Image (cartoon, rainbow, N blue to C red; front, side):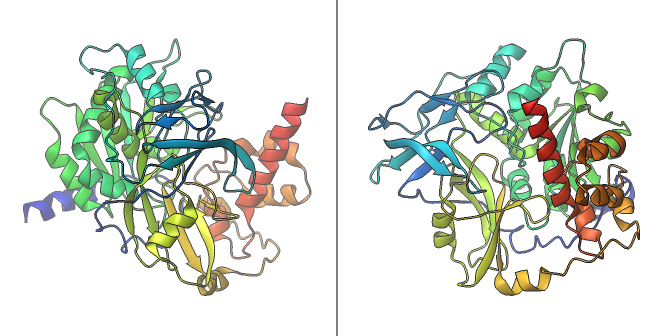
Length: 453
């Protein structure tokens, strides 16, 4: 009864942001399934570029035996992170491997030892009590930690507060508004001690005086678990949000929680905030006290085409084909998404590995794809996309300009680069116009022009 009263009070004051959409959540198949450890595949494929920024630089050679947790590649500059061996084994090749869109990228092929105990070597601990902010930032970079919510931006770069800026609030993002995915939900339930330790590191490195953990109301067990477990003296609270997409976007979260607006082209630090995904915080709290690097992550494997749906702790570099063989899939699968169906990426083949930024694999059958495949009609100027856009842009007009290839006008007059490609406009469009795909193409062309100039 007390729990029900607490949740009723939380729901009464739930926060949210203007606009947005309400796609089906589709989380019930996995949100109560505990995390299971996944077996090692015969070969692990480790791209040197699985984060925003410069690829890591190999420090091993072909034929070399390595121990689980050993550094395989080091950061090549500040906007880069290290790469570690997910298993004890032998480096078979350093060569090109396919990425999700079919391009080839330099990678390390690691063959795990079948009979190895796969114990993890202990590194040099980073003590949260004695380490300086710069030492914590270096430890996070050495651990190879990136944003695990999907963006894969190097976490240490986000935590390096620019001179003249300050942070008063750390927000832990446990919203997980993307349909189908329940990775963060299970991490909040099963790794709460790691999350709280991660908060200690994050508060110290950012200088923030408080931490707020944001969770949508469709995860009441996670909200209550964390709220009841906050260690004494830790300046952390839990806030419950209405279920709406894309509530988990940084700018939406800051607006709903603090009523602060990140300026166009700006960053959360411009309004004295740093936002970190809960799974990323958990990795910081789990790895830094032992001086270890990230070797595995929790991934939701789900969708109509998957037999053994669940949340799995999977070694980085595990090929998608091997994952689907182990979980079982229907014979008539047609599309596989990295991440969720709203912001995720449909893959071009199954022979690439999961990376640090892979939060889920969602598999659809031919029947499901056929139901969702709809003819594209001309824009009817209904303004549904305008009402849905969380950034208050005009997707309808931008789509018309994109079709006419007037990309500069889209950027200069309609703030194209304020779009973070949530897909709300495409989802709500009654004419089924793939607006967000148009915007991605426009951005890519403008970036290429800028690089060539």
